[in-house]
Image (cartoon, rainbow, N blue to C red; front, side):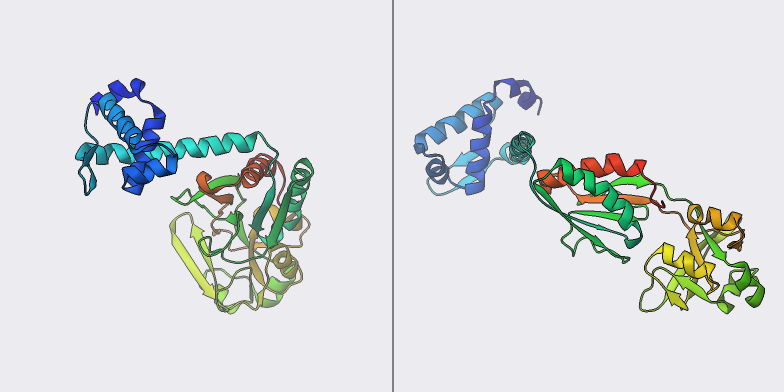
Length: 310
């Protein structure tokens, strides 16, 4: 390996690229035909690469072409480097032109207004880009859908296939009810008491919903229930709670004014839900178009400055 590093300055990248292609095609003659050069030229350039590296990469016979142990190790790095250079060239070419094409975005229904406000100036700046915005409250299967960008709730992390960029850190999620509801139905004192109350959910699985409740001096508790009312967004849930329908888990920031005016009361104040924040998810850079990259840059710079609950 030290010999390879020491001789790297003498390498011709065209020879490296040709070596990678010979291995991919498993043939000197096929690579020669593809490049439009004689087989002897391909052979000479591979020999030149081997001389520069100071080791044999390929075993050649009249019937077969095989990588040596050194060649196998070098090929893994060379193929990746050639691919990265090709991707870099494509990126530079794209940056020299105005991005065009379609960007497909999915986001929670409750964020439709703020997402649209963020997209409008982006589309004005890039007239060649069209946007498809799908708004829904659902559990998103990123592997199964065709969206380019997804704005999701929760602590999403980078994976081998997806990159997660933080947008907002959400406020605490707390349980709220109206004073009128609590007067007529009583105030729950424990998590078990919730089973005797009407509960409102924003997410269900076949009609069953759940809340994860955290107490500072005890373990997490999961409360599972059949909601009396299921709505697709937190704003609707807030309105229903304000109207006395039942208890819901809502972002604290959304309820500050209602609490101050006496329209909502916190329930089980010793417990709170899990605040997940919001993330922008997109596929690894290598598969992004110029239009999608432009959208990522815009949204990650603009959305954190906007109030998602306005």
